[in-house]
Length: 208
Image 1 (tube, rainbow, N blue to C red):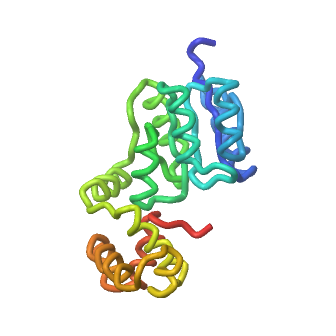
Image 2 (image 1 turned 45 degrees about the vertical axis):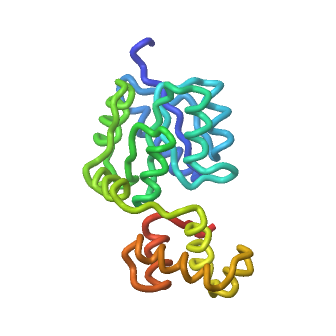
Image 3 (image 1 turned 30 degrees about the vertical axis):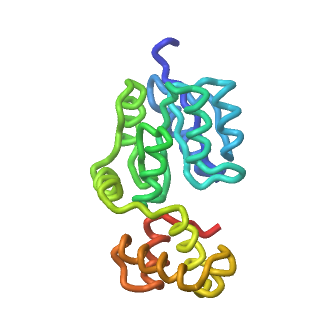
């Protein structure tokens, strides 16, 4: 049927995929084209099925959701992808939208919100709930960490001392202190512990 919206579901949890598929199949005009359990499979199945809309989780094995979105959008610029995740950190949202996602939903939403988002994105528009949009606006207006500051921050989260960080990055301890002071200022936090906590909450750094 020409009017059917074919959907690709991407999530590494089988029960989540199964539940989403069962729900979506109850909606008139919706069909589940395929289900992927990791980022690489998502790209392969997108190529094979060319779905109208893709529901993409962010935390995926082999290739994360942002990378999968980038790969799909590079090959298929018109791809319409909605992030469907439990993660609402402003950095997660920012990276997904930068990669080309057209929507960002949290898994606590109800079926009506999901079906509305699918229809809106299928029509070529974007769907971002107000709560998510506020976090995205905050992220876009804030100071951006440099690549080196991000490296230092990841090592802080890993519990490394300035001396350890200097050794890992082949820079002096004094230079590490300069980077630490800069990232603390940009993040609006007072110390390394707050920096680590905030980095995890916002999705700037992820624990693997």
